[in-house]
Image 1 (cartoon, rainbow, N blue to C red):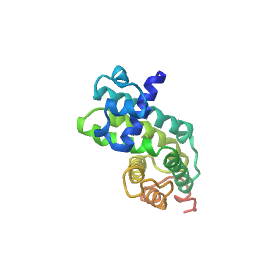
Image 2: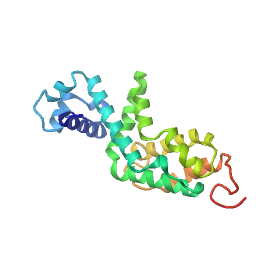
Image 3: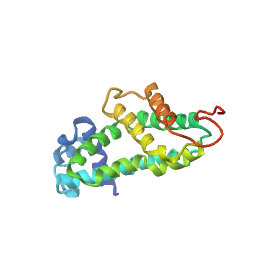
Image 4: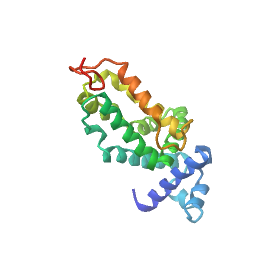
Length: 198
């Protein structure tokens, strides 16, 4: 992405985080980015194109975070270490990506109604079943726990980006939810879920 397009996309993310998708207009982005009127329209003629530009940038930022934190290559020894790994990953997001998470939640809700692939892109860019496969295997937890764990992570993210935990950077609820999901599924190996011998 060239610099001006990145500026426009980053500003659009901030606008959505502040006022929602309905408040995302070319004029609002121009004003927030201190650009001349019509600048955003040059790069994205329609609102749909502006949303697509924003989704592309947001997915890139979120994927970058997950890759930078090396979630997919984490190797926890048991469920307890896996919970800690996931909590650290979540808390990094809460601390540094509040606006991006709010925009992601708003865009997913908006894009679900249009039945576009962009909503799936935003979900998968941040965390996917593939990202969790290695850590689950390393912790000795059956791979069929993946979908439930993804759902739990999405619940945690929703609470912090649009729900009761809005703005919080830590939450004991996250650990409780993740531990509940992991302990409710079968696991393999000679040790119990949180490292205790069975």
